[in-house]
Length: 233
Image 1 (tube, rainbow, N blue to C red):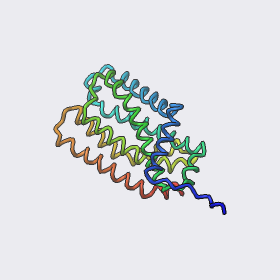
Image 2: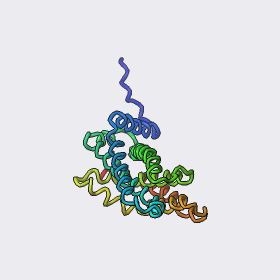
Image 3: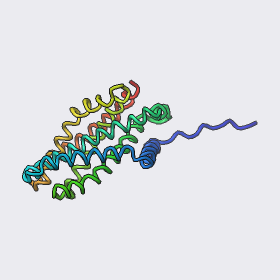
Image 4: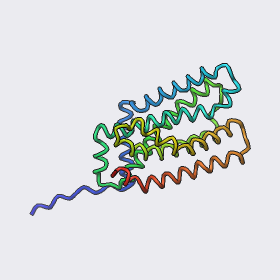
């Protein structure tokens, strides 16, 4: 008697995450549709601020942290929106939801890929900003703050993007939902970045850094618990 066909083995949680990340990276590196739009937007914001603050060198130095995180936040929002919109428009999101994997693996896969895109754009922005504003941004402490802030912003942004992508007004709804929720992480990131740029005492910088770490842990845990409910709705 012929043996019954065996069902393919269900991928593990980590395998599912890596498969989603690899899918997103391969699709992006074929077209550069997402990263290129984020990068162009970031460069436009930097140039606008550069021309606006050209005559006031002192003000330019004091607003560096704010300009940086404004650039990262707007570019990150654009990337988060486009990332989930592409999945929805191509029907990939429905395929991912039908896959025999834990729904939270989809969240972590999208979160890691979105974070990779955001960090890639930041890697281009930092040297250009340093050149235009004559400011050294390649400080270890500042780079750690940028990483922590990007993790927190992407963690909550990926969850809210998955929520808003089901609506017709997703392009407008995501910033409305995201900016109030991400206000804490952006404020802490600006404070910590400004502290490193102004060579403040480490004791003054520890509080916003601790807030960044707490924000990252809390929102990643919350997203892990509620992502299944969000995508079902």
